[in-house]
Image 1: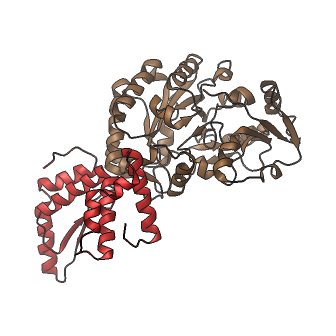
Image 2: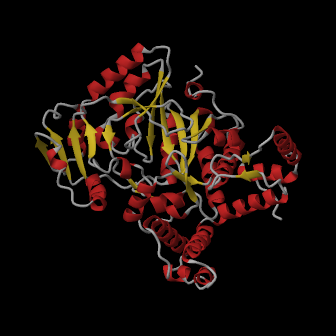
Image 3: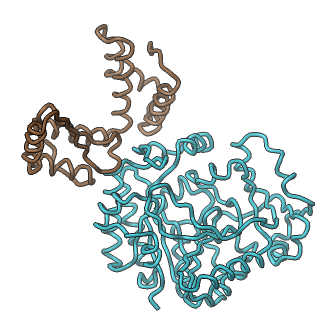
Length: 143
Length: 364
């Protein structure tokens, strides 16, 4: 790999690659020459930091496929809510804690009222129920 | 189960008068015994950890314990605690599970030690239990060793079971992965002693619980203990997730409940595989081929790695469903889990650690 990697990143990456190899009975070389990884590395539009970030994300997805799938499902449902840009819904990385984090900021009482109203509107949405179900380890229909 | 055959027993001077020494001499007729002034100087010749931890299981030290024997289980930061007390009558274990936390916990002091001053242990327990008659104590001996794996050699159970059998405010739990119950069968526990097993499907035992009793040996031993009047406990811990884990665990639970009378089970616990980043390094070094570490574990706020929360909640719910099918009212608790996980699995969280501990008290 032609990436300059710091010690902590390198340790994570090496652990993941070794664990994927052990789990899938493949070799480290096979994983590092996996097409999505090679595509990122050879993409001339990406700088070194972006390449590293994307390679790490791809390897994380490969290492934690079911976690990544649930994170994707939650992300997709948050997008479906089409929230006001000032409202942000996030879940913790790794989904530990089972809680949905809600953030919004307002500069006037009227704005606050408007945002809480918008938020109240989405609480009944099916996507919200499904997000909590996913956080609670329940099966949710794939879309 | 693999026989324990130490290469040597090193006895600290002063321990020869203890019943443990006498039992060891009678049980290990061909093993050389060496009397030394201090065991601490004996263990200063370590080379590398990887070789030392395994090698330390081959040499048995008999020494006096200088500190307190009885301690509160430390649990894990921020997790629901089950109000458990531990007696450390020994340190380290003759068996060698790949996931064992002792590899990290005892890294600086891995010697396999038995403490000879059982009389001090019993005096300390007597003082504590007498002083707090209204408090119910659940006390285990399997925290930094296996409660029974060495019992055929040291006869510890027959020193402590008669004492705990007479206590009205305590239950003694002997937790094991062995089938070494012979010494228990001649004693009367008077409903005050729980013998419990850490349970896993045979596949996990074969892969990662080296030197332990097989699943069927554990269940046979459990049935013998039940017939001898002991209450039983089962700890489904660590639960390991792997392809088709469901059928193996469901089958193991079916075997368990068809082997024993669930109404004589004092408690069951569940806990998923957990380790720390530093234990993980040790496991990788000592057991490079184990697939334990390939599960989808994430770092939790208490510094331990566990399967990510929705996955482990799903695991616990399935396990609980299979347990409830066979044993509808048996007491089940989670080991080292957060309030959120308790809520998601059981629909409630114990209001305090005392409540959870008291739930385990015998109703009689």
